[in-house]
Length: 187
Image (cartoon, rainbow, N blue to C red):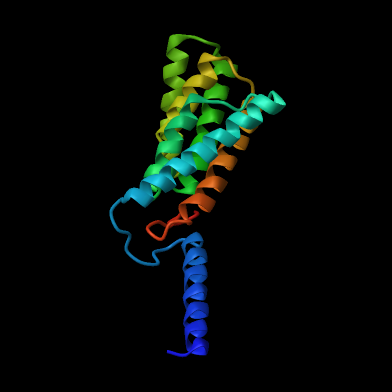
């Protein structure tokens, strides 16, 4: 094989890899995904460390209230199970924002009581189901909103900013692996 032919094959191979990488970001199926491997576990670890680490760094450095326990559960879905419907951007972003709104609204209208927590989470579940944005960690977001007596700014920070960071990092990191694609769909 001559050097020119070898160089052409490398160029074609690189362009296929780049095309496949960006194909995964537009949604839809590019090809079937294999079962988890050691490299898949590494991508999971990198994504989780990068996503949660970035939010923790922002919170510590800028003294921003960006930390929510429900983000830990979201990280499991985004970085270890990115193919499931509840890990898709529509569900993650919509589920958390809708749940934050449900929880904050319940607290603002009815105060902080045991039954208001239950009502806020139930309202979040119903709203997520109706809007097709079901994301289980959103229930915890609604719970925290009522339990901690949050105002409407809670919807933007920590919820909106935190979820935006986690999803962007999930898109970037999950698509580094040839075994993954994220998202399957946006809306």
